[in-house]
Length: 282
Ligand code: A3P
Image 1 (cartoon, rainbow, N blue to C red):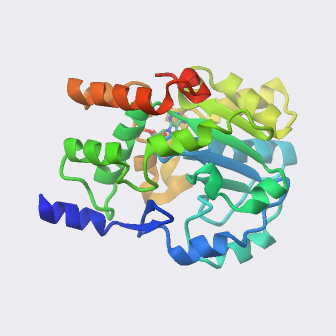
Image 2: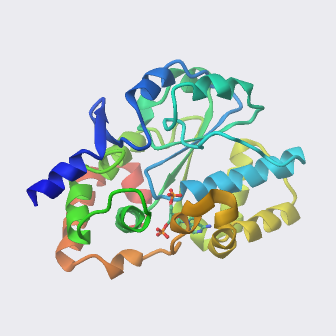
């Protein structure tokens, strides 16, 4: 057990109190991020890992492509805080609008995002399915260290000792800003239930005026099945792992009754009385 803990702790480095995966983030990039110059027409997508960020990135790129009649191309890794520190220099060359996905807390975003009143779409997913998706991601993807068991992952997830830290800290931090001007909140579960309505709301928030037919076409391209079928083409070898199952309620396959109660307790403790707690499908 001890050696496993040690092996896992080597997975992360801590920056300003939050663990990040050493394979994806560096403190040099975090320092460079402070100098990042946001533009007022950037599109920020904030989510905790595994809440559907690749789904939304895809939807927004389709919206941009349909609106500009030009295929949206973006050669940087879409997560703002990942990659080498030079990326922010290169990003100055990219045409607007740029999609900036992030797993950062609201108060860890670069200041220019607020200064330039950049619109932020926040996507949340219920914490149980998020944890299950995160576990499978670690254990399915070759080349990233896996956890010994679901129970081990669950206990680390509850402690916030996973990449990008605690789901609950992220939720508490963002819950204070979901009604801010320039911020819109959507739920994975709502999008799954009614994709076209969700896409329409996203389009309206970012000011894309598309026809009903265009929205229907984008919906057809954005179902789980459509995205999974193309995942290798769009995301390379990791594609099929990013589009694993795409369902609501998969947690029932892994959670024990005790884990279920523990999560319910934690949810209550952290989010009862917040507007997010009331809105999260839980
Ligand atoms: P599962 O592991 O439960 O299948 P992220 O992109 O933030 O890493 O989130 C990944 C999760 O979003 C995965 O969940 C993935 O299957 C799901 N997902 C991706 N595209 C989706 C889509 N079009 N419809 C529903 N779920 C989708």
